[in-house]
Image (cartoon, rainbow, N blue to C red):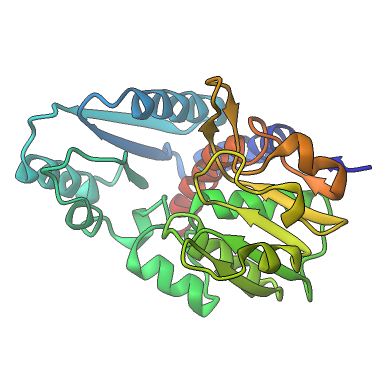
Length: 281
């Protein structure tokens, strides 16, 4: 019988602690913690994410600043806004909502955010520190995965972990966090040979490939811990993950659902990072 890794419950518990610490910070320092979110253009999915981030800020007592630029905004317009937020002492964290319109060089924009305000944890400095096992702001989704495993007492040390997906946002930082927690880590991707065999060796299997129900029952070892980072729509338009949940669940010791697994943790870890950014100054 499997145990469901309930990200919603873990997220709610963690937000309660974050709220307490935000209150403590405000009482000790006599000022708010500020998170700035920049959105360029009218991407509907991005608009939902931004609304959820603002809602989460309200919930934990962080002051949110939202900046909306039109689809036609120039590279210069976006850079000027980000630089003004870098200089603003009321802003502890800066988040530029991706994707940006095609004519904007996202790398250049994100490169303007200093590591101490990079609450997404995407900067070269924060990524480098993560690789070196140093204190840093960690990418929110993989950090959320580690918090779920920790909350459920899942032993990572000495376990064989397989991460399917190598994106800079999830796959690579996920592998680093597992490695830093003393797991033996394999990263698989679209060019991996014998993918099924690699997955079958995993004590902890993390799917972050962006393909609906890609991980099948045959790919999962009996008793494995399965973490599904995917967020897709199936052929009927229903929300689903990268794991074929119904067919895989009975083979697992632990598994995350979609929705309600990793998803709620991402925004919670953004709040966690913003608090940390303020505390570190």
